[in-house]
Image 1: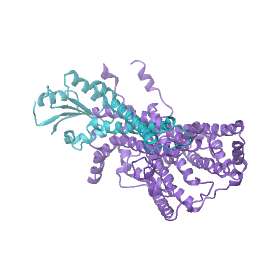
Image 2: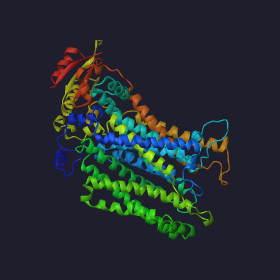
Image 3: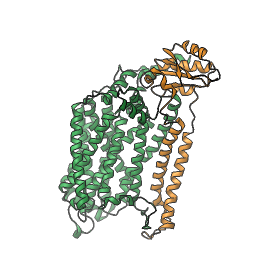
Image 4: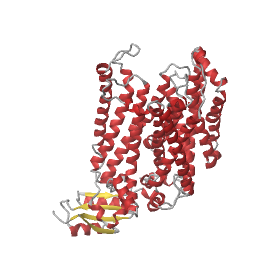
Length: 461
Length: 177
């Protein structure tokens, strides 16, 4: 007892949440975003752009259903094109949410408490966007259920030795687990909204969703066990999902794909782009809703550091990729990388190196990390860079493989772009809806961060 | 004792006061009590002996079931129901079963964690007597409540209310059924 309080009273230069908050003000500020009738201009603009682009997605999907995948630029040999690029990009973005909610929980990183909710929502919506692409890419999307093993009159079953089937299980498990984890996290806050809502409809809806949560200590103890277990379960899951996605490539023998370091390389890249998306969402949101006291500069700084660390791992992977191609002694591998660097996709390659390896180095400087505007710009650059990375891996490897006579370049059509931008709209639309109807910051977890939440020492006497 | 009330509830405005009140109540010999707080408080778990529950066991069983389901499903399909020769590999090619076995372990464990939590908490339960206390909605904002239930052998409406009032509660109220 003698040395404990000294540690707590040590002044911190960067606090996780601003001073002066009480249980009541935290609750009121976060729930007001949902319960008030006023919406900031950014929300209306965001949901408007999202809805417009969502309609573009519906239009391009309808055309795709009517005419087939030929409306996209996929031609032999580049049959994966944009669809799988976008799939890998979106799945990767989702990873930051699970990392924040699961791994940082297990590591007892308290700062995660005010960003985990919307990061998990981001995961969910990113996975929804990702899941669309393999289905749309199938040619006959209405037969998507054939991917699952079920007793059928055709007497055929999926080939469980194929990484594409592994992917189905990995992604659907990931989507389910993320949704459940997110919902469990929401239950106490839904109870708060039920207790604070004024309109009968809101009271009823939040009440039904909260399932009668009454903040009982008996419930809290079980709830905490459940959260820890879910975090423990999600941790290997999040690391495995992008690993399995990378198996789609590594198990094939295409030069530029067939290598053993893809799993860690993909996972690092996923977290890299995910944290970029967290920053790209958090920075405008916190200023639109005046939440700088809860999502502080410390959060941005920490996220930027994670971005820097994973960006350096990605840079290392790029260097190793080239080194292994040279060291392997395989002319095909060497040719694949030589083509990437000097061939028809050289411009994209060097642009992605600039985005992913050069640009994160600015994050070494504290001044840069302390400027939300610069961080926002750098996160957008990283998102572009990571998209290009997947494009490069997929398109350049498929375009120029073993036999030069079968080489052919990929040219994206307007419907490739329309589908891609359409999913960005889908994502924005879902995200802004979420911000409007559910608390974007975990209220009860922020309460635990307040100094008042500490039970005083005198009661132990 | 059969009474018309669910219990007596006391309201506190800070976690330390609630923790000392809960400790006093257990020292007084009350067994059927519960506390309601806007966030989990570790000390209350100590006082109410809430550190152990069956959830880890449920999740373990769920995970094992999922793993078995994943492996046996693949074994059944690739060896018995729909055997196909892929690159001359043996039909029982276990290394390629690992991923799906793993994924289904995670999936089943997760679903059993969520359903197990709800079952152990007795949720969904849209109605509960504690909601009858007019100020109880503050339990999800900034107030801390202690409820001694009428099923407690020591429960006596007058005495228990008096006892709770002696604990410097902000307000003591009966909880209607």
